[in-house]
Amino acid sequence: MSEDLNFVQRARHEKLEQLVARGIAPYAYRFDPTHRTAAAVAALPQGEGEGPQVCVAGRLIAWRANRKTAFAHLADESGRIQL
Image 1 (tube, helix red, strand yellow):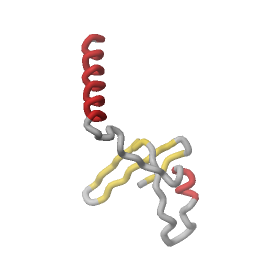
Image 2: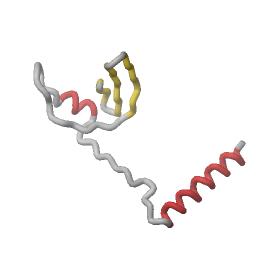
Image 3: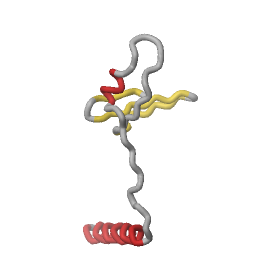
């Protein structure tokens, strides 16, 4: 089993080296969150109205879809937020 894993790891490293040799950035995507989830929740105004635009990143821990509506929970080290 460990030989298969080593084979897979070697293959992945070879593919990575080939991408770099061709001038392709293998990890080119970057995302800069503006808020943690707790700060995003705190930025919401009390009552009616929209709050500021925020960008959060975390782990999707729940997804519930029902016909045309969907709800999700995103969590990071500061808390979680419903989307």
